[in-house]
Length: 218
Image (cartoon, rainbow, N blue to C red):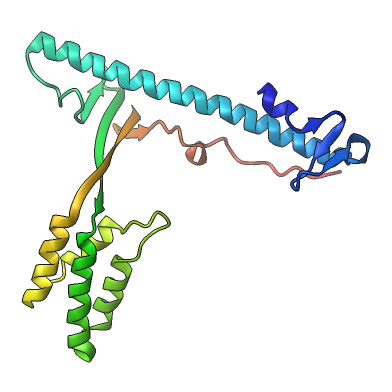
């Protein structure tokens, strides 16, 4: 937090976005107050980020240790040491879920499939519905990381076309799927009086802090 508060000035000068050093007496009070407000919030947010990171590490460790102990005591694997698992408090009021999901990507074979599909569309020309052409174009559009959407290509595979080339392209798409990495999730819930499990969110955008009051000058 100290670094965040002190890195804005150097020997009585303030560095602006272009790296120019502005004398302290030339910086407006409102600019100083804005800077202070931003830095205080960022410092607090970084503290929360570190705390959440430590909590996540602790929580996954505690769940894994419970699974190990329970497996040793009962001779069973409760979802496996790295599997999905749901734990409830004794009274059922609280629930903890640990989940793992594989992140899938398509390898270079997907481009081969696209070439076959493009060939089909060119041959069908006006006979190919515009909806299919748009779906194909959207399915193979890459994101900022240069990756294609697994879900969009899955939708493409659901189109039933008898052409053997199309079927071959779909088979290639299936073979081109590979696991890129695995994501881990920890979900926490509290049961309401109505019996519904409501997430205990750690997402800043989802946390309710009451109605925001507008501050106005008098």
